[in-house]
Length: 132
Image 1: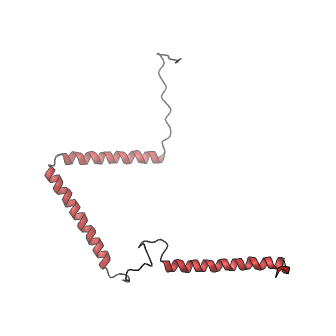
Image 2: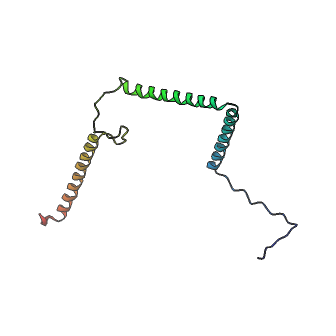
Image 3: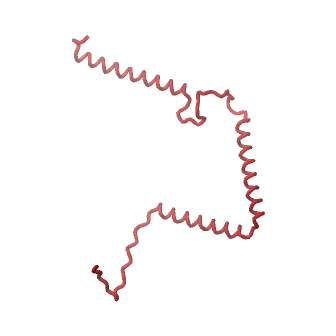
């Protein structure tokens, strides 16, 4: 309701805050994306719809062919043992390794825990020898 207004005084601009590195990187990347989009739009506006369809199908066909080649090469390469499909590893990129290795590790950890419990139990029995 009560606004202190002085027409002859200019407003002071807000002080600029320090822009962090992440903001600068973001701004540069968005500027690069906008320039790339403008470049692509400028050059694709000249092409007819038939040329755009043909170009799109060519890119799709070439990328699909290359992907099929990579898959076939990976499956047919003679490197490494070719084991039959087993349920030992459910996911081929399992970061924890096979189930057999996990069982061995867990058995070893249980053994180490039993040793720790045995030492604790022996030390408690030495403190109070009347219980056994």
